[in-house]
Image (cartoon, rainbow, N blue to C red; front, side, top):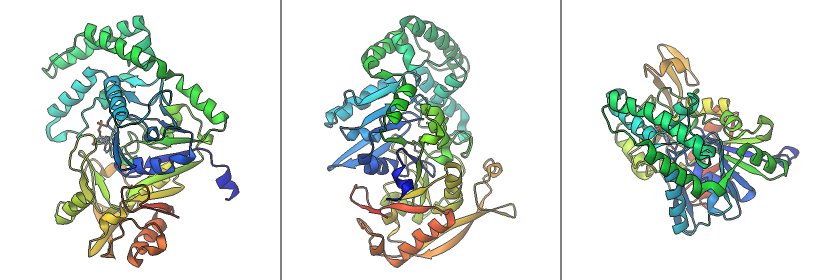
Length: 431
Ligand code: IMP
């Protein structure tokens, strides 16, 4: 072990594309060496799939570390939490045999999603017609709007009846006016919301902590923390393909604000990227395939949303996207997932740059997002045409697959230290 490796205490696992890269498996795989797993943004729009001991867990709000009984899991202040969704998820996990007691903690400063947020999300999407974002319809955007607008309801408010009542009365009246006046849709009874959210507060009260203080205490005590990202770099509110993004900071910087952890405590950043590309919802996707190759990727890669079940859009590997993720997040390593999904192709094109109005771009140019006028420039690799499923050593990969990975490493200047060759934990190459 090098001196640098010895000093690595806390690690971030971040999506390097448009989400659904397979972060759940990577967090689960690495989890053993950590004491705490913390989420710092997003809500139940996320869907992390973990296969463990022949069981299949679909996690939305709760960090993937929860499957391991000895890990402490924190929902950070940067998250937006729908308490009903949280309770349902906890119940489902318990039914599947997962122990959830003092190991799940919720930051008092995280914001709540209320039913009017969800109603607004859905109403806006419907009204937007072809310009719709293709959100998960969970109320994520409107909840972050309430937060930034400074009238959001925080987890701490759920156990403070007077504050809760006053906040719900104020915000509900305003949101109801928009729902009925602008969108001609159903409104909400503030008294019922108050009763429901007070009850949620009672149920989760024992899990609420001063999140920032708690996590910094863990770090000071020498506990190892894994920061679990949701969604991906290209869905980041600032750096993604705006406005076809989610409403939070999905990138490494989100950890500092979404947990109250200083940059010096983030010692390593692992970007998770698929060996090809997918996205759900609308927005630019330069390497998208609307042909039988795209269908093959979707079927073989089982590219259907964990949360919504929507078929994902599929396309070839996009290096400008990965380079952008490597730069913005300062990636130390890449975890490359689903390499085996490419096993049957004769040829595998990789996008090395975009041509946008006569100029070549090696990273994602923000100005072109609005116009979606990218011409991907491809370099085509020979397919390996043999199974890589379950391979656990890099040397055992066919030469063409090794060449594919090495090219990606050279182009992103980042080592692919983990390569996943199947959904199970053991179907992994660790280099
Ligand atoms: P929202 O986060 O529900 O507001 O959705 C905004 C955009 O982010 C949509 O294109 C969603 O499909 C996408 N999105 C949100 N969460 C995920 C995720 O976990 N994986 C992939 N895409 C996501």
